[in-house]
Image (cartoon, rainbow, N blue to C red):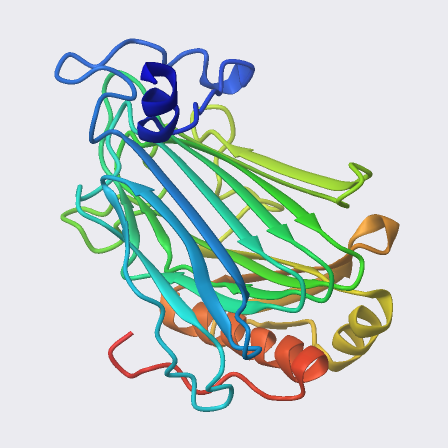
Length: 317
């Protein structure tokens, strides 16, 4: 009985012990130890069709500070789409925080997941903040994962690992937007963080590995302002679309790659290996225009897969 209770109350472990780039930041925080209650957030979301064919949030498990409430149906272009926002009661991520998010979309189901606000990464002195995500889509499932930007402060240390396990007939739109820092805070904190390590990898349900992308931004080792890194740009968006090849071809042909030097915004698109889908990247100076391009690209994906566009963003977002 004790073991059963323990299994239900404890969140899965979040382990980054093999990440060599984080080995410099293993000192235990002086206030609360790594993974202490309130510092080890866990979230499990499971979407599936009910008996009437409606896509619903059937499975929900959470550990503070992560919070998710009831799904909403407010998308004007796709009113049957369940929309869920991930919230946090703990403020910004601090040193020693560990988070894990497991999202499953069952056969033929569909969903939209975002965050209620930007993810702030606080200044860290002892350890780092880590996030593990497991996103699983079964046959013919559809998911839009479009969180608000990540904002690192001075001396932030952050690592994430995202696993996308997607059936051949399913489609996932997975996006991340990273600010260079608090651009207008005092003298500015652009690229003043210690390290950002971000890894995403895709696979099929049978375990076949399709691709792996990892970037480690360490301003002390290489200046992000260098040509070929960020250059003069301040905001970076990374979008992964895993979808059947015929859909990927249609999306690719409908998407423009460009550099607008006057307005300082650029976008590019390429194909993922093993016919896994597409990789779309955006560079800009402010989050608004970057978010707009990501949303327009999502609209292209939705129109191709579901036959309907993404509605305009709410003006207060």
